[in-house]
Amino acid sequence: MEDILVVSNLDKHFGGLQAVQDLSFSVKEHEILGLIGPNGAGKTTTFNLIAGFYPSDSGEVLFSGKDITGLRADQICQMGICRTFQVARPFSNMTALENSMTGAFCHTSHVHEAEDIALHWLEFVGLADRRNDLARNMTTINQRRLELARSLSTRPAVLLMDETMAGLTPTEVDVAIELIARVRDSGVTIIVVEHVMRAIMSISERIVVLDGGEKIAEGTPEEISQNETVIRAYLGEGYRHARTA
Image 1 (cartoon, rainbow, N blue to C red):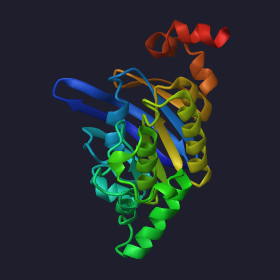
Image 2 (cartoon, one colour; image 1 turned 180 degrees about the vertical axis):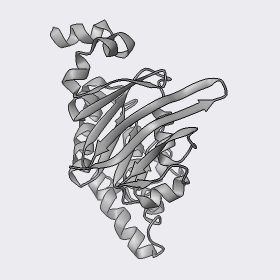
Image 3 (tube, rainbow, N blue to C red; image 1 turned 180 degrees about the horizontal axis):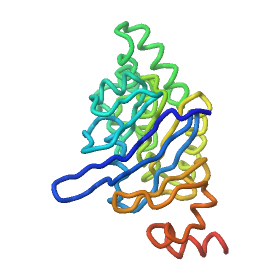
Image 4 (cartoon, helix red, strand yellow; image 1 turned 60 degrees about the horizontal axis):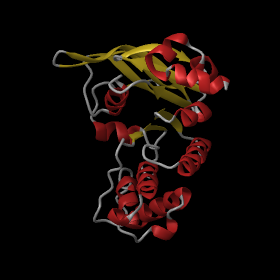
């Protein structure tokens, strides 16, 4: 399979802080790529650079062979890259259906068509029976499902998922893992930022590890789990002992 997203030599400073430094990696079509590292490693900043929320200081991002560096977030979304956020951000006074329709309006101005698209993805994430519920009344996991439905309603080719499992119970994490796999199987390429290691190790085909804004490792989950640099910088000795226990 060909690379659908190529990140080359990205740099981003915030004042005297170098948030991302000379970062390069690629993602193949229909792949799930994990992006991990300690807090402050530059993971969310990387998402913001790819999705057009921040301009990069240097470097480039290619999507399906096209240079999207410097484009606005709405332009990049219309081209086929969408992202979720660490904290779900539904429109709290709107229903689940209305929330999901806002994503569909990225590609259509017809209300009935937007409703059909929104309903499809609400059913996909298991919220069809909650379509008329106000977002503010939903549980944490259902708000995350709703954000996923809204994102999928934009018809993304690449979906950036930022810590969607934070705050979930172990059972809910299992549900989320299965759902992410189904999203990939539907034809969407996924980059996942996540701190739940059993999740990231089980769903990712490759993993990129950041520390201090730099890439310190890249490889399969098995390779990353045994990488001494990654263990020292992020996973810790406890993770090594847990794997061998």
